[in-house]
Image 1 (cartoon, rainbow, N blue to C red):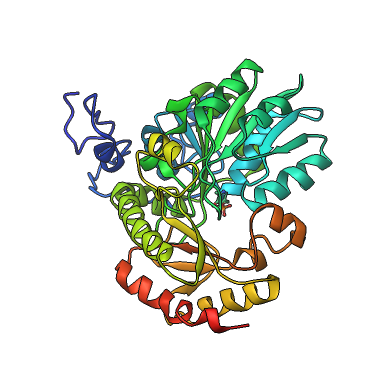
Image 2 (image 1 turned 45 degrees about the vertical axis):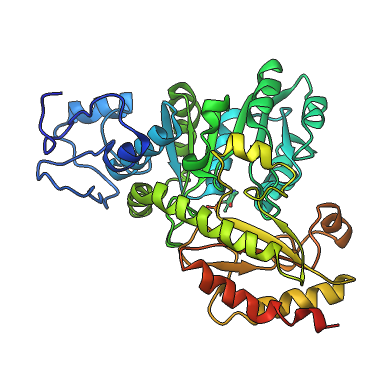
Length: 412
Ligand SMILES: *Cc1c(COP(=O)(O)O)cnc(C)c1O
């Protein structure tokens, strides 16, 4: 408490706000007193002597090798844990790497997981195909129907895994209700918080045991690096996941950790600006004659708007999805492609959480491997377009979307 801010190990007072923690918490400042967090781009750490080296290898305390730990990665982990309100966090090479670490750390052959059918596509593949090969069974349920989650629980259920809002149709699930179901069954609830970020919702405060992140999205915020993380109790992070990462090696690179660490400092202002721009675009889209439907939790027309107000602090996130009007798959696809291809500067890409607005056509990209029936059952027609709204002026974004939208109703 009495040490100066330039001293290594300097402690912060209690009770600081999240916006302050995002900038100030967990700085491992070196003897040089650098104000910006240092990037420790090194694979190994020189040990002062053999006895210290032996002690560090035995206890896992102190830095030895970057697959085990690295000061820049530690800064990111501690800061993200502070923002999510969990005791600890552990970085991973990507969001999918974090899920792999979670399953390797928690489950064994014969265990059972309950997962929403509307989860991120690679998550569905990982559980449905890869983990199934190792004897981990998964039941896929409705994103929004809590009774289906409850009914899917079996004696060997160890984990419920949810994502809210989902990609791209922005369906929510009630985190507190799912936490109750998980805990009554003696299972854990994990929540993928990549879309909402701790700025909009802190799943741990609603009862989730684990919070999973793709740092590639809003935490980085400028579409530069791959990163992932798991947040939870110190017991789970150091007891279950650190040993997996140390041996399996889905480790977060120090450079990528540094990028997302600095991204956390501006996360709150960026996410709020994304939400404001997205709401403006969503309201405008709802008024367009060639738009059949808009999916955005911040709109009163969203079926779960009340839950969004309660669970996401009244904000809707940065992703707006809409469907163009039309009849039949071919016409819908022609019109959607026309809208996307008429944009003169919006990016056609599949990531999100970038300063740059990104438009994508889920039916032929992220959801392209589903059958037409599966897609229609999920409400994902060929007319659906996802807009991951960036930080450009929303009027310019709307003008670029209008280029193709204004005339698309005339296309057969
Ligand atoms: C991108 C994404 C992931 C996967 O993260 P990567 O960093 O790309 O591995 C998982 N869940 C959601 C919701 C995502 O948007």
